[in-house]
Length: 308
Image 1 (cartoon, rainbow, N blue to C red):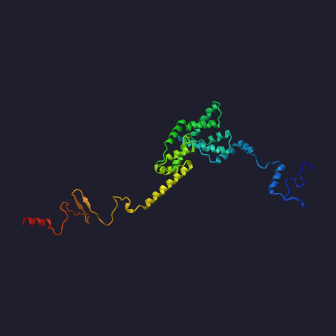
Image 2: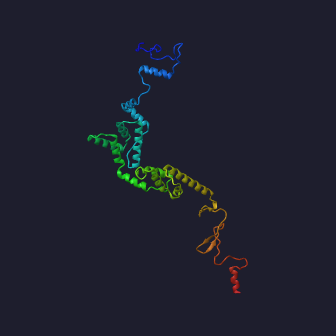
Image 3: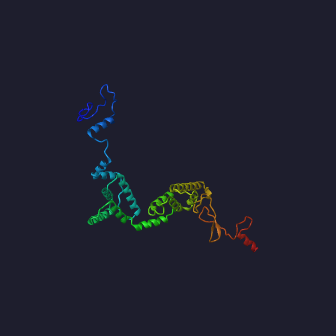
């Protein structure tokens, strides 16, 4: 057999017929099998190796940048909020790790998202490093970024804020988010699961904490879930009591309008009771004289009797 030529059942284009010759005992080959045989005859691998894909991306910066932008990386414009700066850095690192970027790509893609004040700052830092002959690596960028936007004195302040954190008027969900956010600056205090749980429970409002302590929970996620459940039950009970409150027990307004009946109001200047009438004049009767009686004489009649 001549090994330089394909078998007799392979045509000039290197394809195998979908069925063997008449009388063959071999079943017809599938399309996938035919494709593999064709690729093998032409020396084409079944799939592109990972190292080749990585090399293609490294040699094609535009394609790699397009893949980076498809993951919606956040922009960074600077500012004085250290929590926002650290959150941006975390998001960028997550994207770069997924893409398995090279050292040069990590620096280029991250600095590409700098805008405004942050972009001007990085241009100044990068220019200074080049003048000194320093390598602009990823560790160099992270160190300069933390030095500028997350300095040590700010981290100490945030660690102190975490130690004094209380729920107060926040919801349990809001308090837990703030607790998690600030705990990154005091990792030594919450390195153990039990310590983290106790500190979280200690910062809850007294009415929630008192109902949560008897459970003696030591898992942080369970404590958060139970605190939310207690808060939800308290809100439902409060709403139920509000709906069931009788109308007469609800607070009345002193300036509420009255319809129909007219009430007596005292006149503090004269000490008499005044009742409004249909007209503009008011009927008064001295309080010290008492109420008039039908059988008693009028004041004019009394004077006549005294004269007689």
